Length: 143
Image 1 (cartoon, rainbow, N blue to C red):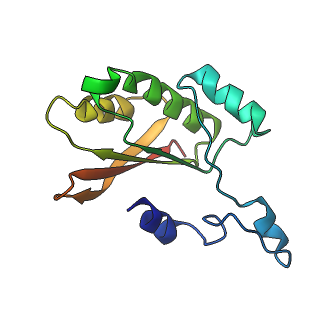
Image 2 (cartoon, one colour):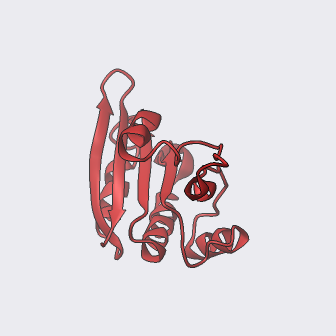
């Protein structure tokens, strides 16, 4: 799943909550889960709160956030947020994990719109599990 994808693509210091006192470079590597109000303003508010206004995030995870019958077309706001995160840090990697729940789930529309966002460089499906119908996409900025 997502954890395996992170382990394959990032150094182990990035996917740990602990830092080593003997390795000063690891002091800035950590994972923190935070809520985000989906909008460009919400992105800026969160980054200001975390004192990351100019740096942005290296990795952003979102899971099970697209399902039109329940959430409506709120995925437009998610795409707006992803686009803003990639504008601030084009090297940010956005990992989106979703469960397919039928042709009206909105995922295809979400992905198509994401591909056309101004600061999105690529959107790639990196994982699919047939049994549970799980898809994982990696979105990168314009580098």
